[in-house]
Length: 175
Image (tube, rainbow, N blue to C red):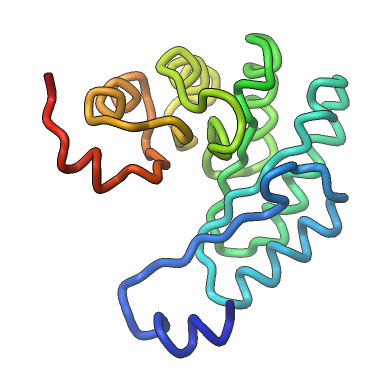
């Protein structure tokens, strides 16, 4: 990534985001930290890390907190979005995950990698926003395909959207 950035992006207005532990999230914390450090050294200003959702489902909350905090620390000035994979979690686990993300110092809680399940829902975004308040960003990601969906997610509390259908959404009209 470093050579590409130096040659093609360095003197532009393009901001680089990268992923950490994508898409599974089950790497050891030290490996996630190394990925984060390398991405930031190569020019990334935002990192989307996948939390260890199995540890979360196993109620290993201290381990999940340490994992996120380790990546936040390794990321230096870069903003960290912690992906919790809402489709894999029940209501209580979503609440706990969002609270841990906030306590660990991440800048955003993110609904999904977009590789599992249905992705972002209005209910999940609203829940995450209630848990983290206004101090943290909420990124709705996965399954967003039209302008009505995008608007509903923003109204529910999303501060960012992640979609591979951005052009389609921008060209679509509301009903």
